[in-house]
Length: 376
Image (cartoon, rainbow, N blue to C red; front, side, top):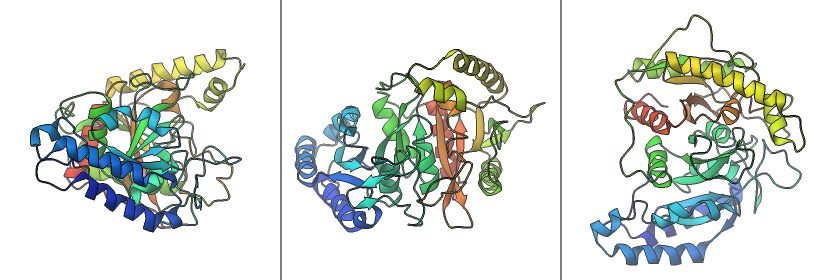
């Protein structure tokens, strides 16, 4: 769990040194990192200790004082300024798909191909592959990610951690298409909320979910996808646990939730020189349908992925993005919550989607689910 170094607690140097030791032991097998910044991280941790200086008040001005984090890719430090200013210590850059590897599938670390920490013969998902693995393996409590089609939520689901994609445009993004937004991988929703408070500059824990249970709609396929039975069953069982715990209540609409398949729109928006008229029509129609859905409920719940983690030879004909990229096109915030384990021993995820600008809602619901024991 994320815990800032304050008062007479552990020194940042000791916390960061322990994280570096874990990485040195585990990363040759996991291949989650492309770079590890041992000397720089320890120097930065010493600076944090000097700033905190045993003062609880000083520590509170650095809400992530001494927390070791990993950043997505070699350029990840550019998007981690708020975290570093809050006292976090970046220990390394995590793996993303290497040259010639499909964008949705693999990571390539210093020691080789990034593996799923639950089964080395399976992919962790991508493209925030190393970030998800580093968090799932307990190397760091937080890692940054970017999500242009599901690149935070998919590896979060397949590695059994929490993954949050933020509302399009709410945080700075270098993606000119607007599809990719910043996100985070964390062991718990509480840790993801700590990240959100820093990057959104909120000084309070955020918006409560309102009276529980929160009204929610369930869709196994969003009306167009063809997911495998097992991820659907695991996600639906997770919804049942949320209902039993009093966190959500299912609203049964007169018609099942149904969106237009966003694949052609997403691909057109990503292709230079493409005719965007069709993409804009799909986006506008899905926006209308989502607006109707969110007039009936506060959350939309789906499986995060249509399949279990596949092998390192690739996904076959099914895009792992089938249930995630609609919300990159629409811009809605979405969170993947651990939903249990399949017959192969690998995790699956439940996706929580909220109206635009309601990150606090999905985080609060996820935190309440954890608090009430509704998460595996």
